[in-house]
Length: 62
Image (cartoon, rainbow, N blue to C red):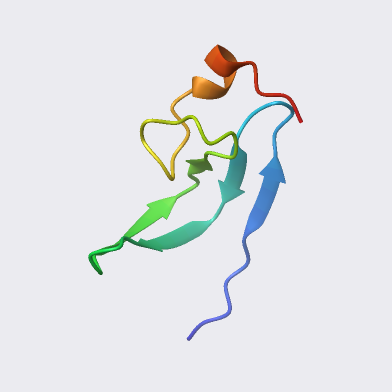
C-alpha cells in the first residue's frame, strides 16, 4: 500500500475538510474513493458521512 498524505481540518462550527483521496467502505462492503470530501461532525447530516450543511440549521458550534 502506498503511503499517501491526508490533511484534515476541522472547520470552525462546520465539517471536517479532508484534502486528499479517501476510500469509504459502507456497511454492505461497498467501497468508493472520494477526493477532497467534507465530512459531517455535527451528526445532523442526512447524507452521512458527508456534510450537507445541516450544522447551520442545528446551530452546531465547536
